[in-house]
Length: 184
Image 1: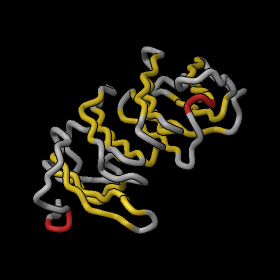
Image 2 (image 1 turned 180 degrees about the vertical axis):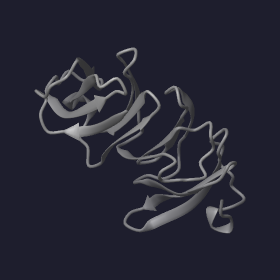
Image 3 (image 1 turned 45 degrees about the vertical axis):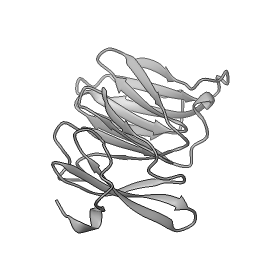
């Protein structure tokens, strides 16, 4: 399966899904084309109600596409023509998977970072955990091991980054150590 942002909402597709936020603005602001292993094409139109987006990303793991855009992470199961949405605290920042963090815990398919939090999803698109309060203007990840995830949150923009370490299985924050002391 592969997925990419596309420029036209009128592209060729077999199925059309709508990803939206809470508001009533029904104009299409972005489109993602997902090609399944069976060559069927699902198009996801993202509505303006999802919010403005400086950052956007899409990742595929198994039969699930994860789309980060605006104030949401959309989890798309193309076999069921289903979209689940997860509202973020602030803007979407980045999606991480094993191509970014090679030692990521096997139970975690994708990590989604926002302005202040980190969400972990499993391979079926279910939310495993959500850790808030990691920053106020950006969260980035640097390392992952089987039991820990290390990154930084920006607390005093620009440049006021502070390290954090989380337990990979639960997302619980370890206050007593920073990621700089360990490597996967």
